[in-house]
Image 1 (cartoon, helix red, strand yellow):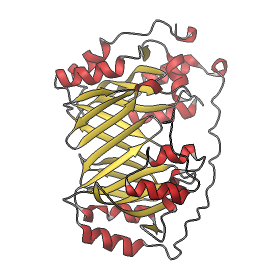
Image 2 (cartoon, one colour; image 1 turned 180 degrees about the vertical axis):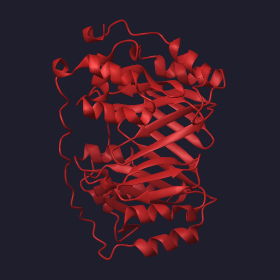
Image 3 (cartoon, one colour; image 1 turned 120 degrees about the vertical axis):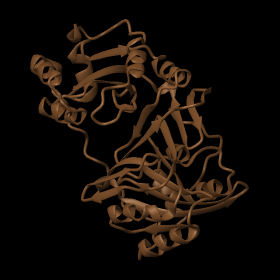
Length: 358
């Protein structure tokens, strides 16, 4: 679902002018969708004015982001927006993957999906904003970095001058990704083998390999595996978990991602507020905005590890795509927080489950 816009723009330049002036009736992503173009094309309309196109080995650029000092970062998908304030540190970015492991800024970067980068400056009644914005090959936003009052603007300008593209063109060569591989039909999956290997997991990071081995997608595996390892919850589960985490002072981890970036919050949350269809966490240094009306299913998932069972809450849209994941904060080598475990196990189960799961 997208916002209904009352203004129709004739060109990306018109839309960008309103966005920069702070008079646009919507966000760039929503305006682009209404115009049947991409957000990257809207931003690129400002090239030559207040947008500078960047050209880089993106992994190398990421390794230099610590020079900016404290920044605000945003990673989002169609259903959730994850915002953090902090410092880029403990960065590793080589080849197709990048990792930022500072507690405040914790990212997993899939750099082969990074196609376009821009340095953006806007001036409006909210003041001057400077940012770095990155998009994938389809023109969808991957990750955005905004300067704060504590940021080093000189370092920002140095970074731009180093990575400014030779050709400052607003024309983007977009391309679509190949469709995802179709998972095997339910009836062709050896559920007994899947269950035995799931039960033998020693690390949560082995889970992706398990699914690949059985040509089984994430949602499908939850449907088929049975109640020992996955149970469907009621739609209220997410709000219940956020509210109880605040009330019981339980430190959590919140993952939101897209094709090019997963952004993670770790810590306690303080303020949960519903606003229309959105449920929000509104804390200093961390904001989460998630469309509750986009939630099709929520699953409680248990994965064995050498440190015991790890319990997660996974949120899916109506295309059976995972768009948010929550778990309890845990030190490596330590068992799961019993308070988190008990909270998830107390959640109400959905009435219906797949016959294959019985």
